Every structure is written in structure tokens, then in C-alpha cells.
Length: 493
Image 1 (cartoon, rainbow, N blue to C red):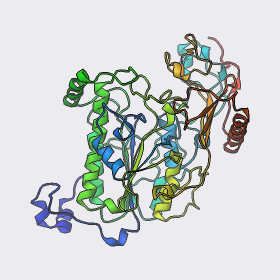
Image 2 (image 1 turned 60 degrees about the vertical axis):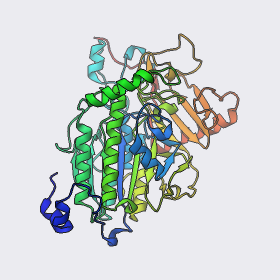
Image 3 (image 1 turned 180 degrees about the vertical axis):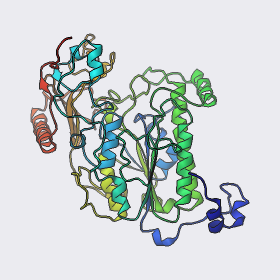
Image 4 (image 1 turned 90 degrees about the vertical axis):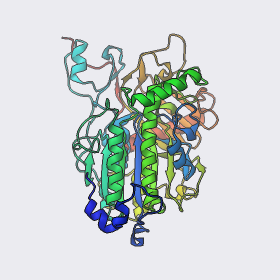
């Protein structure tokens, strides 16, 4: 997207053009006619763990701009992604629906791992089956890679309220751009493309976002910034990596004994720098009072790179380390600065929240909506208590990560999985996980035991039964598939 200098000159005058990009004495404020229709910016990091930001206690990674966003707004201590990995959370953000409704559970739409070790009839891809000497067979249930075109997206909901929309960065939910006016996977190229191994992708995404804000400052806009960082492979600006290598010499270990990764730290900083540039742009055009900015992640940190402690587990797991994510929101004049909320929220809440802010109807939405508006919570008010749910009917390999092994834990308990077919529910301070391969139940009080170290299912059987019954009913309501017992029924070659 190129800057239209002619229009800029008409709106700001030749005086502005003779100054630097952000002169201290010059600023242009959007017309007051749109002040009741706020701009919305949703910034989504990829695989950034709950503890990988300063406002949640990171002491090696440097996130001054994300911290500023938090200090000038509200943080949610109990914010959750809709899924334990990338694609399902993004699909739930776009649709406002839980994963069983859109059937996107994982990139590749199939289990990952050795099928000979699987105890349930799950979906596997043909290439993986072939590599283990099996012939392909019919899929036992449906798993999708793409959102269906009939989905009413968050962009389409806001379009009916007069919003111009753009998505820059990772998409991961199919070829359909789902109603975004502008859609680019790196801020320069088209909507398709993968930029995992590109140290400059974050800069291009931020460049495009800043230009989009400048070009649409006089009308309501919705901007979805979807960074590829901090997903593997780890690639970053060598100069920034060197800075953290020097810092690592004096600060090599987390309190858990885990080593920090300088390249990962540089990727965190790349995202933080982008956030800072966006905030600076909003400041320059005096849009901060008319713009909601949200920063969060699509799932927990990857366990062998990110340090999720004190949370248990990491990406791919339904433990807190896999689904609890950083979340900060700023809306100057509406959200009280430097406030915290312990209200549990979920990615599915974003669509109804944005619709509430835009004062637009949800009656034309085609799919069931599972989220609620958290606008009252952003304003410091209570929202109605409700349960949150997760469903993952597949296997995800991760040999060596015992965090994901159902109890009883032992030295020989590692099964080679970091994600196993399971469902979970959080209701109040209680959280229940059900593993489908053996019916194992785990009950935790996540307020008192954030590390999920004490399974209380046998101590509080009535609580476990109540949550289990609610979880079963939710699966019926959403038509969530539970894999059948028995190993995948595929014939040997």
C-alpha cells in the first residue's frame, strides 16, 4: 500500500510535508462525527506464551511498548485462546464460534505422530500413513483446514456498520479472505503466503498497518495485525540477537532453571517494536481516545522454547500453558488505565465485543456465536458468569514433554504426546479436563493452583461430576466428535 502524498498534502498542508514523519508540533485529529464509532485494532502474536510479556512478569524479554499498552489500559489475567494451537484460535476469532462448530482443530487437519501408538480412531493424513507403512482409509470424522465461505466473519459484521477493514499477516484459515477489504500475508504480497522464516516480515506487517491507519484516519476502521513472530523457526535481526546474547551472559536462566533463547527474545522485541509504532501513529493523529487496541496471542508458548512456568504444559495442550495467553486492551478515556481483570475471557468473545462497540446487529450472522461481549468488563463492570470450553479430538506428537501425560505421572510416563484427544471446561475457579483414550478426568482449582499440580477429581467428586456433565452436554450441543476406541483402522501395505 503506497502513501498518497497528494491527499496527505490536501489534508495536512504543505507544512506537515516539510516536517519529519511524526513532528512534535503537528497532529491531525479525526473528525468528531466518528467519535461514537471507535476504530478497532486487534494485534495477534503467534505462539507467544502467557509469561513472555513484561506485564505478566517476563524478566529477560523486553516489551516496553506492550507494557505501555497494558499500563495505559487493562490486562486480563485469565484470558484464553479458543484452541491450543494456531489455526483453531484464528478460526474462532474470525467466526466467534468454538472449534467443534467450524471443525478446524489443527494445521493440516489431521493428527500428528506415530499411528501405531494411537489408541483412538482419529483422522490421519495419507502421507503420514504411508510413512508408517499403512494404506489410507475413510476418515472417521470431519476435520477441516478452511473456514467455510458461508461464515459471517468479524470483518463482515463490522462492514455493515461502515468499517473499512484490513488483515496483514498470518491467516491460516483458507483461501477465502472472509470480507476483509484488504488482505495480505506480509503487508506487501497477496492474501496467500507463509513467512515463518522471514526476519523482516514483522516490519512489513507494521509498515502496512501504519499506512492503513494514516489512509483511513478520517473514517472508522478495523485492523487485524497478525504477526508471524514468534513462531518457529527462530529467525531475527542479527543485531538484536547479539544484544540478547550479551544480556544472556549475565542473565542465562529463568527461576525454573530453563535457559532463555536470545533469538526468541529478539523475535519478541520485533513484535513489541511494531506495537510501539502503531501506538505512536495513533498518538500522532490523536486517535487514541477513539481507538480500541487489543494485544494477545493465538495459544500458549512452545514448551521447548518459551518458558511458561508457573503454568503447566505449552502449545498443543489443554493445560494452562497451552491456552492461557497474554491480553491487554487500551482505549483511552473508556478503559481505566493500569487496571486488571480476573474475568475469564476467550477468543470467541472478540466478535460480539466488536459488534457491541460498533453498535451493529448480529442478526445476520449465519453461524452460532459462542462468545459474549466483554465491553462491560473493559469498562470495569461485571459480565455474567459462564463456562468456557475447549475440544481437541486429535493427537499431537511431542516426545519428551511429560507435561502432557495424564496422571499418574512417573519417570516412565512419557507417551510421546504433547496433545491428546481431550475436552476441557472452566467454570468459576474450577477446570476439568477429560482425556478420551482412557476416560481419565483431571480437576483443578486454577485460582489456588495455577500450575495444575494437584488433581482434585477424587477429593471433590461432586464438582468433577457437575463439570463433566456440563462438558458432555456442551459436546452434544456443538456436535463435538469424540473419537471411538480402538487404534486407527488402516490396513498394512
